[in-house]
Length: 138
Image (cartoon, rainbow, N blue to C red):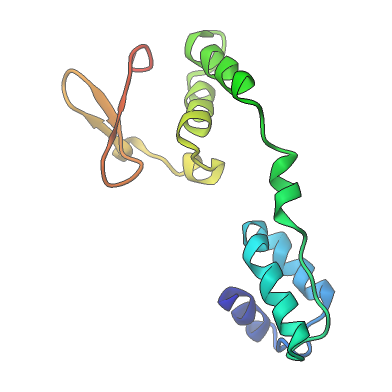
């Protein structure tokens, strides 16, 4: 909510004068905030702090993009074993499917995130590096 208010302020407007078009423009730049901003906008309009404003319901956004457990594991098996796919694509897909890493974060990973322990490799995604199992280390 603070980011929306800051964005409005930087654009020379306030929540009281904000239009639905401005909310939509802000959401197009930051779509992951939809879940929290929707409730905030409903609250502000009910209390008279803004005109009626809304944001899309996030549950339908994610529901359309989820896959079943069997399909996910089939994709994991393919990424592990299909040597016809590029290594970078295989690694990115596995990070997405196994570690729920967002694509934006995957794209920012560097060799600094790899921990070589001599006999094993690990990937530093948080404080504790996650060990990379064979055959992914070859």
